[in-house]
Image (cartoon, rainbow, N blue to C red):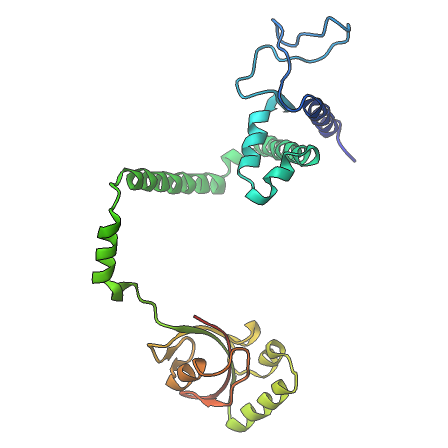
Length: 266
């Protein structure tokens, strides 16, 4: 059941939004001399702000908190570019207002509950403040650096190309088996259509990877080391020869036999 307070907030937001849409979102309430002034023309009491709001017209009220058009516009400006135009339409703008209203309702509820005094919240707040300060310091220092001429950048790159080179790598999955016969048996089932992930979970003897599709991660062409297996040049070599997505022939590793599948290569 909707509470009287939430219903009042929603009703006020809807009324004010409708007024903004009719006016083309270009004007705001006309302030009178005193707070809470009423409309004298009609005789009906209508809320009006006591003084002009520097952040634009008020579009919603939650308790004593006034949400302004400036806040809604700021929210829309931070949305993905592809949906900003939609949020400026009538229904989209209403959703943006409702989002700010809902956020404010929960924020006020959190303050009333005493979350600000919670030790975990205080610790997180302190860490967040530190992170923000460091990030801002970095931004300020970076902005103050002199611009590096393009010819200097190119000269540095030409003299240090090895520092920027990235070795080819392959993202590999495997199913570990105790013998070559077992590996051939499992490969036969996979070639006939058995699902790789389900087969890995059921047949692989590698407890660390069997439940996540046998994912080993990236294998680099310049190194024989394979994460979770060790020194395995045979697996490394197969990772750069096997067609992507195919099941390899059984490969002898340091201790066991393996079937591998390459997800991608870079």
